[in-house]
Length: 126
Image 1 (cartoon, helix red, strand yellow):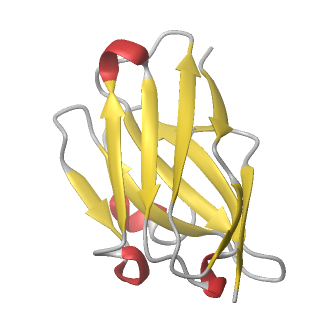
Image 2 (image 1 turned 135 degrees about the horizontal axis):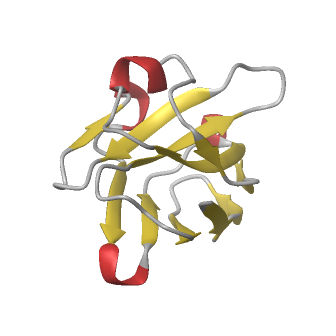
């Protein structure tokens, strides 16, 4: 049973940066795909970025060049470095995992994950 716990959310001004962390516990198979979603009030869930066990990454267009996903396998921790934040980035951010590879086309639709964290709130002010 895998458990994901996010941290690092908070409130920053537009143009600022935040780094989210996701601590994973339990048995993490080498085939796992890890990633981040977000959901703003009144909006559908949006897949942001994924990273597979080989370090392959993919990003949704809205965060390319601003967000960077990375992982520290020794610490079982996933990160999302978020730079040049905008008010439109305000949302609850969720860490998630897919057991067997990255079905990015599903993540882009807000789906695809088998395991979810409880989320961390990010608020960006003007």
